[in-house]
Length: 370
Ligand code: NAD
Image (cartoon, rainbow, N blue to C red):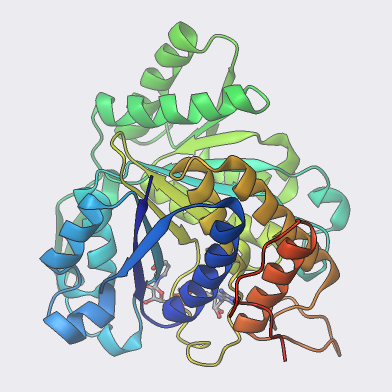
């Protein structure tokens, strides 16, 4: 069966990391006989420049028909003066909402070769393997907001149904892992958090009795993620807390450029993107780390293309290159030579092929690493 993949490069380093990841995908697809067709479309600042809107109807329609979507990143200083509803980031928020992408998976698993770039002591990083499941299509990012020069407010609202579906998603992942789920909230202050706690407790007791649920206030969780990260298996939390906690958890891995994400819905549509933004400071310089994007491709292979073996082989190749080098500037040690975005992708492709009895196509990507 042919898988239809829509590629949204976006802005800043988005096109560079997506291009590198697509070359890796081509090599993996070839080896595993996966039939993938790709179409490109505009989103974010690139779409504003081309069509005057951050999410053109044509892009949204293509995404609605796709088996999976790969997105680079959106945003940048060029569009900073625009009002919130016209900005590049709005295009991504609207796409998540339109496709009902309610469950955002952010796996965090430091690997040897990257942790020396983390400010956290190595013994604290030992055994860290957590999955943050962030609610993505509701909460304060989608509530009513008002901004006036001397007065402003944002609204956070959740229904029990919105909470239930993401709690069930997280619980199913916990079942396949170490049967431990932590709900992060602010139930001592916020009404929405109290609803999260009540709904999660009821569902876990009735439907997932084998999964242990603990509830933790977000301030304590922020501290524990840095000081005792190996205590976590699966974390489930709302949109705002999930956004902040997953970025701070990136510190554990050594670089924000390493982290992938998958955004799932109840239908077939799923979107895969690195956790990082458009990094305008790096754009156009071939120095961005493409691993977050490449690992997002691995998640896509696993969750949308039903190719778990291809996903695992790709992840092994990535980990092996991260361990042995070469490295992009975000991970390179003092005096260590650095590699470019495209070269790192080539090394991953070559590593992937070296572990396989691989058929190499004529004009294979990744064979030239000069
Ligand atoms: P950012 O993630 O773009 O950058 C934060 C820091 O991490 C920077 O120092 C950057 O150089 C570094 N970094 C990010 N990705 C990297 C990579 N692949 N390799 C090496 N280093 C990397 O966050 P920011 O600077 O706060 O935001 C920049 C723009 O991106 C803003 O317009 C913001 O709104 C947007 N943004 C978009 C998304 C998205 O598209 N999903 C997410 C976050 C921020």
